[in-house]
Each structure stands twice: as C-alpha cells, then as structure tokens.
Image (tube, rainbow, N blue to C red; front, top):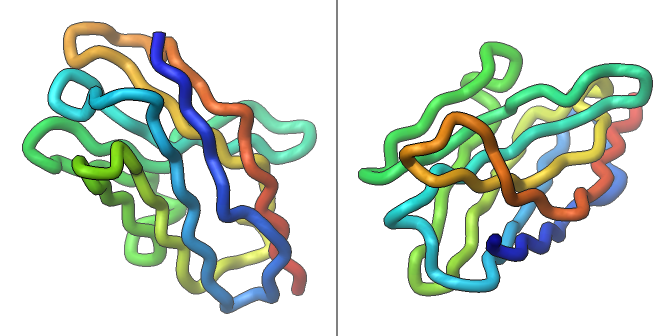
Length: 118
C-alpha cells in the first residue's frame, strides 16, 4: 500500500479558503484514482471529489463550483482547493487512493481537520 499524508487544514471563517495537500509516498497517479473524503461529527464519511487518469474529475453536488481537486505528478501531491467555505464544510478531510481496476479505496491518510466558523 501507499502512504498518504494530508496537511493544510485549519480554522477559517465562512466565505474563506483553504488548500489541502496530500503527499503520496511514491508515484502512483498513473495507476490510481485519488480522492478526498470528509467526515463530520456524527455523520458518515462522504466522497468530496476524485481525480483519475487523464485528470478526469468528479465532485459531490455540495461542493461543485466551490472546490477544485488537482494533482502535481512531479510532487506526488494531490490538492483540494476549497473556496467559499461554509460552516457545514466543517469535517475531518481524508485523502484516499485506489487502483484504477479496484472499486474500493484501500489507502487512506490520517486526516486533517477543517473548521469553518460562522
């Protein structure tokens, strides 16, 4: 498995922005789908966005137009740019990876806390 390390979380006011980063321990982007999930207190973990080979992206409806997922192959890093943040975006955000041929995400980071104050 690949190790994933997230960073960039923090406390921000509503309407503000944050950029999360996820560094993979080795080069995997050509063979893996990368994703960001989040889990708020008392709620199930939910998919936020993912990016696959050819830089195809997909977003949950609740972040469309506000969040952007991207990656830097040379740095083995996936980003989540979060704009127009809302208090309901408060959650622990996780980076995840799965092989292109697999359905389930099998590698997870430790998570980074994002708190949006009203």
